[in-house]
Length: 233
Image 1: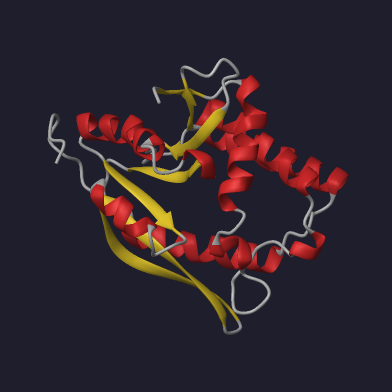
Image 2: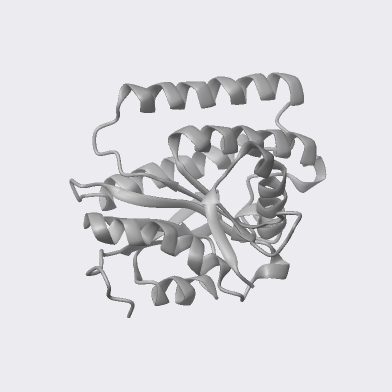
């Protein structure tokens, strides 16, 4: 299956949204409720419509302010999106463009909430996660060159195990290697994800605990050192 990795286009957004929703449906982060799992969405009140709008907003934001890629089978005439990756580029010193992008994303999400409501979003747990993430990144992100942050990589269940995810990683890790920069990710699964990431050069550096009065989830923070260009081991 010949796979092409390319920047996301407007026409790719519906397929990218579907890919993300399917890939994360059974993720521990999305199942923080009921006990014993952590969850930022109440499944009884979850709105796929609201979630689709939210993800579409983030896709459009990512087209301008992130490294947003989609994977497709070049032999597929329909151009179905098989995988999605969103990386945040290193930005040791935020620019005015960064500030404007953050503000525009916030404003778009606010309008969405006013129209669609929160769609089952557990606001308390969302902010527990964001606070823990901010603390950990402040502790770990010490390199003045900054980090390529793998915010999300997903592959449709039907396309998993065919090298699609590896290509989505390689698209950015090759750039990081040429620039001599580190990469960073936070995995919500120890197995099998960590072993997969380790094969691509990532090393576990910290476990992030998000705790809501005794109900907790662990996220696994991993860093990849830049490799010498041409080193595929």
